Length: 311
Image 1 (tube, one colour):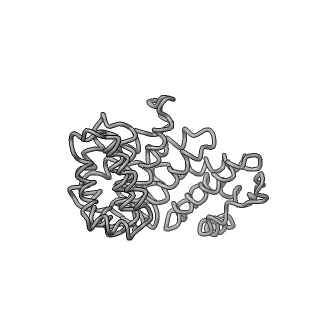
Image 2 (cartoon, helix red, strand yellow):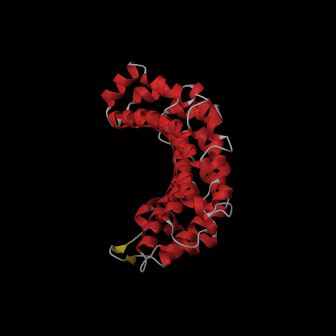
Image 3 (cartoon, one colour):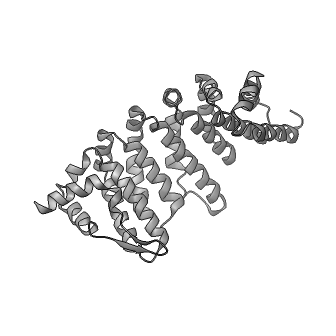
């Protein structure tokens, strides 16, 4: 504990040796290395930079080896993670690495998703998702980049909690974020990939293959706000490559929101019929991309709206 620089360098060396090397991770795990690194990360006297390196190494090991991931998917570890994340004085970089470890443990892992729910990690992620939004007034320019990185990491972890594999209970819990997301979408005045992409990913994963959650997003006003944003970016797509790219992202997100049943409810609203009847004919020219149509992303909606308009 008296040589934090040496400890940190040793952990980074382990990380380099084991990254994307499943056999090396197996050997390290069999030698007790994974348990040692975990115990080091939770030692009360450990230097913050050593703790950060230890958590990052655990994430790398788990990401490189499914057996290592399974060995770390224990209630004790998820409880420790939740305890670290609720600390108000936790350094920003350490918080982001902790979120990264949580993301790795829940990604493509049903048992990890369940542990995230039962230990409160999912609720904590939702709180962080709302409180660390990079465009909020509370964030200052000095920490904006780091806050944006943390928020994007939180968004990725939430996506891992609700989908791949699909977790309907987690999707239902994440409905609580929809009103906040609607407000964020209304605040976006300029195309911004770093903000819009994580929002759209979270929406798409949360509503995917879940008609009840899709209806909740519709009821929150999020679908209308998303549509208005798509129309705004589509109108400037012929002069802005970024607007063009984000319009496609938004179209794919809308497709996920209406795939199961909301599409039929939308056709009851004249406002939406006006929006989408205009968009049906939209084919815009993106700088460097030529002619692009957003509608291949929305085949199910396209057919339903066409039928309603003709009627």
